[in-house]
Length: 445
Image 1: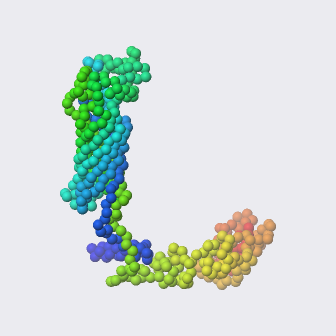
Image 2: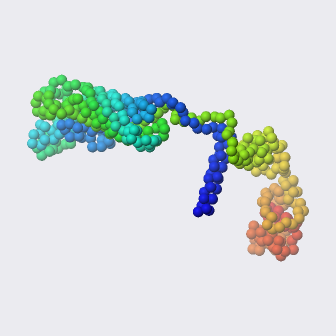
Image 3: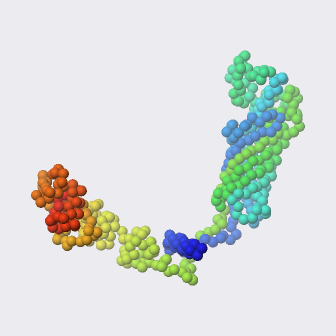
């Protein structure tokens, strides 16, 4: 258990150091504070859904993919200190509901309709149960009640391109003796044809609206709403069947209703944020503060904890990891590079000047004392660097011919490595200068 606690403390210390390491000077001068008395502005929402009809006929809309989905626009303003109440203004456009009725014995009662809600505007009060569920909740239920004013137009599907529908007692629909199916093209306005001797129809009316649903918090400014609303209208004319009809199909005295199941995305664009970043003039480093976290030994503006070159001379420009800039990537920083445009891959001296092949060759042919095998590494050199570079037909020197084990007139890489290994094992009579010559010959082939 003690070991576990010790490891946990070490993990926390490492985590804290990594956080501070990633922050740097600027972030350590910034802290997040809560905004006092923030101003909350109206929140805009946009959504869509599908409608269902409730009246004398059967609902003809089975799911949200059938028919035309309305667009819903809302604007709400939070009320009260804890925002448990809201005032909503809702606009609904391009809604559609449909229904049908079949009565096989009396074929004259086979009816259908489509009612278009061209536009509606309403307002309601909303409660989110904040008094019961405290704290910052990710999911909030709500209830609302209000009223709306809407315009609508009702049509019916009486025929197709071939002629009028004729309904038969067996349930079939026929046109000119042929069995057909409805085309769901509602071409006749019910008010225009007045087939029930009704007379005047009202193209607009009022409704009482109740909503219930859930709000899902995505962020402090974005909320996704899933809800359904029931619209109790003050008319019995949505389907064209009313108790006021004078002939054929006479409805009951109950008013028609419809529901809207919708999804809404509410975005708060204008309110003050709950917290704000505030810059401080000084860092609070009191107490047991580890000053190595903010140390900058070479004063280049990059903390030692993430400085890859912590001995940079003062005043030299550095990159994000504290190393002097090296524009030509030759390994010599700009501030001591005498040639800032060296060819890519060129070998340069300590001043950044490109070495000639002769200079490189002279360096390689120096008499260098033997070293331990573990300290040896090979640097491949190009053809232009070898003393054999002027040979048109490279022939294996006599003293190296015995290394050509497979007699292919070529010293392979494996044969070269074997010769070097035997040299260090004292199994060859070659001298160090012979090994250097062998290396040069290998790359000249």
